[in-house]
Length: 317
Image (cartoon, rainbow, N blue to C red; front, side, top):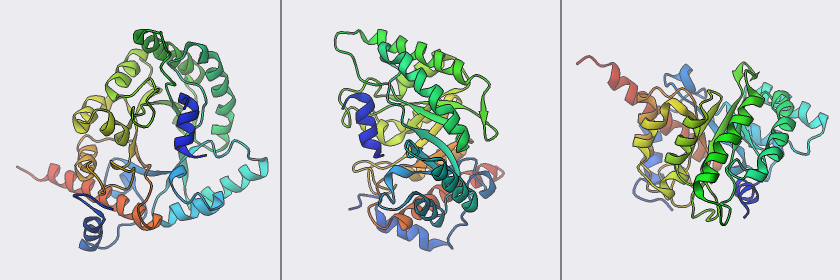
């Protein structure tokens, strides 16, 4: 499923200053990094690939092989399993285990948390998908807000988000998958991509997650969407850290790889390391060139920037 199509369904509807050539220079400065990411490579965070953005013309198992070729051990889905047979599940699980890949997150629920009439259908969807998440060992589910409702005060929809998330949290209370607690991740969408979408900025999403007050309800910080909607990315990372469940990575404009647009992703990755962010940063971009090459470059930028930040922290004054 195409991620943009998914968002529209739920809601109702060439390199810049630090370009590709600069990324290539980074890669030439030292030997390629090893394939493993996360704490095992000296940074607190792990890296993932949101699968809807890459290798869409290939069979599912081959797509996983390409992700592994690019050096990643985590993959995020958007309901690719919706029409799978039991044999499809067996093949997918066998391939991910062969490659050492985890499915760290998924999306695809069709109803939004800000729409009162969507509450029960959303809870029914979540009940339906939880066994599938168990089957593919995927512990995290992305939730969207849905559209603004004409004539409904904003504070009503704001409260609806909180109450729906509390009800959804009850469904996953104390549940774990693959040794991790099941988490529900609330995502914003910028108003340029979807002018009708209710929840467009991280500041309000953070308020909602805080008001929900449940450790299994977390914030998905999509840096691409937030840069378009409001900017001021690093300060918001700092403010949201204790409620942060996932970070999504793409540059502005164009949703291409880090280094092609206006976001200083080296500083972003440094900050994630400085903050000791132990979650996942997922690449959700349309590669401007060869996908494997661009995914490797993004991974190496993230790991080098994170290692550099941590090395400065441990140098004695």
